[in-house]
Image (tube, rainbow, N blue to C red; front, side, top):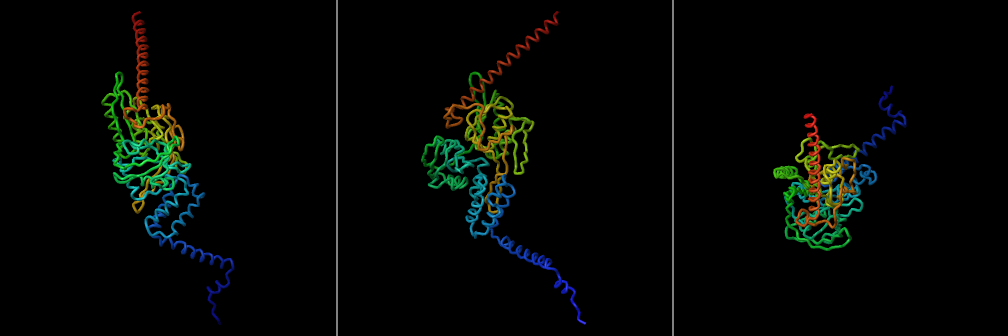
Length: 443
């Protein structure tokens, strides 16, 4: 009698459907092994590309853009190419990010990353002193503001100018970070730039780089025959700014100022956390800003109960007032805490996260947008002041020839005089009421 192997019989007699199923499993296993093999063999440069892709994929504000640009395919194309140097990895990342169309989602090469973190600490920089932004609609690199006391300020470069060339390179092609990098350099070295002013004049300038003291907080007392005012200028929101503002407000309070002119002109922003902390100094339990993430979840941020200054306030803004300084300006305006005077602000209503990458470079990713307390989206629109001031605006904010500051002082003094008049009238009414009561008591 011949013995039959039951297993062999089962396999031989199984249906075609089952055989196809088994074949499918084997094929899937082979594909899986083949598909995962390149990931297991990624070199450092390819791993950096993958690390960047994952961070953007998890946090980018507009995930709908991923389908439009075939985001997964961009990743595959980037890691399939041979990458043997850091520069090749950086170029692959920049090419991968470009189709997203967001100039603020960008790679920061190690030197640029160090420079950016240094400016957020708030000491000094070496360069020409231009604060730059990128226009979303056309990618042009524009001047948000020149830093006070910088070569750019000395050359009278104004907010809103378009940077056309830097040493014959196109800033629009280079992108925001590479353009900023080309403008930085050793003290005494020179850079040739071409700009287009807001009135469409083309200017060619040679600027000599030097060390620029950022001095983000400046203050002084303004005295005249009738009033004593305080002047507080904040040029950026770097790490130590909230503490410096606290010291400045305490100093002004000790000098018995009757009102404060807050100057946010040419403040291109910085750390959102610093801007929120400064807003706390002027607002008590009022909404500061509302942020909106990729899931459309709104996160309102209120001020704390304690304030450092609750007296009269007038705030100066201009086209160089951007980002975190617009958050502060919008909160002051919407809560009717301060009049805004000057000109329309820059209009950057997006928030970026900053991440250290594994090789010492950095990655900025747009992760949220923000609305002012009344629900205004200011991206590409800016904030309209309560009162426009006469143009052209002064080129040296806070200086002796600053007409806008003089206008702010006059406005503040008029407001204080009105309060004095209203207070006198109220006191007169109170005195009349008191006399009437006394007369009744005498009857």
